[in-house]
Length: 297
Image 1 (cartoon, rainbow, N blue to C red):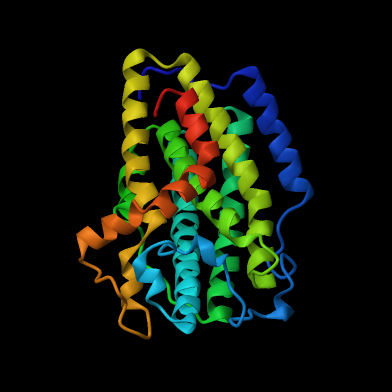
Image 2: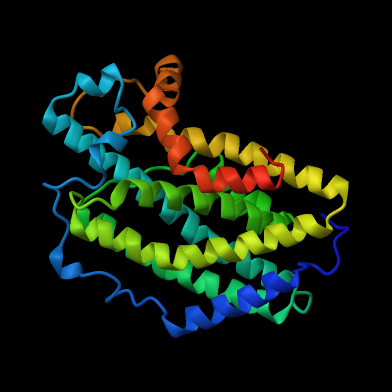
């Protein structure tokens, strides 16, 4: 992406919006000790997500589990979601600070400052999620297929706009998923509070990256726009299946999980179950609408 001067061009609305985000971030920075009521602890007797949003819900595999097994599966699915946030949010600061060091003096003051704020907030988020995982005694899942390599090896070599847009897609999918399943009154209060507190910062991160992306497509050449759309399309094709079902769960259950981690046919059946397809359409509607607007999907 070399034909776009300056390095990150912003339209007027985006520039003014990012200035507002900076003010809001400085006015209410997240404090790790106060972000949630840690003294409540995590109540593993309650659910971390609504049962109808389990990956297996609506399939014979779910119906075959007893109540205790279903409960265990819900907590492991939650562990995978939090693990995804940890993977993303501990790799973003090196990526963004790397852009700042490489392109010093070639970004607007607003973009420069917000990338610094963004990086700081992601570090605090990582600490929060790590504390939660330890408190809840949950296992850390491996990164989604190719995600770690994308964030640590491929995006640092790309134009910063590509890095910002790709991390937007990952963050937005993860954020929509977490909020969609966790905000019911039946959910463990600390889990619900944590995702809600995280959402406050993430909403700003998403707005920033959307403005950068929309500004890019306003000025990009047809060739650069086509390359960016292809990159976005490929990433989304990998992300949505991973957030629909992750086969690593079979390695963590205390019982024999009904789907082997290498049973590709069963995994595809679950990912394409009517319940999951309907849930994804509702859960990811905001990002799907944005991608349609940009002619990505």
